[in-house]
Image (cartoon, rainbow, N blue to C red; front, side, top):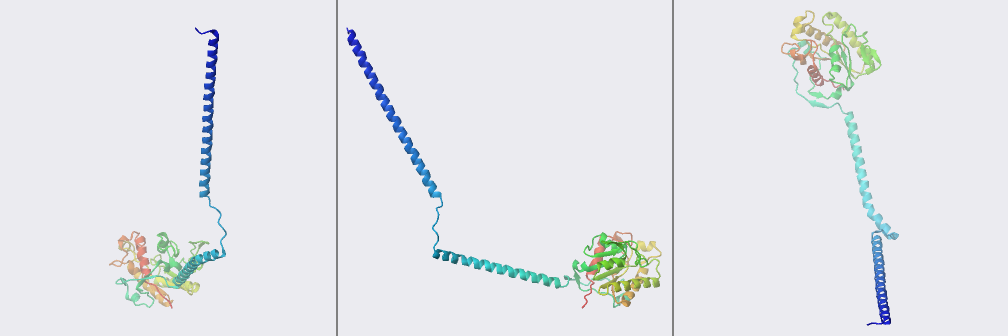
Length: 335
């Protein structure tokens, strides 16, 4: 059996062992914690150093100031580029000058002309007209639309159709329904930018270089030949006086359809043909030009074709184009 004192000593010894073990474990734990902390700090420092090194590699460092020799070399390297740019600029300027010269030459050239065959059909035209020195023959070429930039068309409702059908919008149309050679000086229903005026008033405002006149359809039914010649001559003289430097063309009265001819006693194609001979005589006496536009309209009977899409005297857009095809191939070049 153990005595009381031996038991006490044994317990004291056990407590010392336990305390020693605790201290050993504590020291080991502290050592491990300290080592781990030092290792972590070392890793952080390495990572920081790596990042700084990468930043330095990607940063553009300032360069040293170039020497005089380096500057001269750079200028020498740039010189060919400057020469090339100068050459390109000179070439572009030369091209611009050439284009400007071509534009000036084109503006001074006559209106574009396209060669055409003489397709005039004059079998229904009288010898009196065909032999007239005032008759404008087929020129052998067709002018472009620009030819009509400085043209004024004068007449009644037939001429007014040029504007209504928008056949030649670059021209001036001085016409209105109902105007005839008896009212041409007084009828002020011609609309202009400055208001309504007479035919001569509108012509004065337009100041055209070429004037195309077509009158007669509204008077051939009741004008005597003498009166027709008198009033037409008076009008032509007034236009000549107002525009002494302009070309003046008297256009023939156009035919009517066979149905219209048959239904009227006062207007017939035979009478129209006779009055056209009066017009060519006026052209000769006043030293102006005559255009046999009627020959481009007549069918094999000398009438306006039935497909003209009008009332027998007036017609549709198709025949306005035929009209202008004729005008384009019957022009005058004055020296």
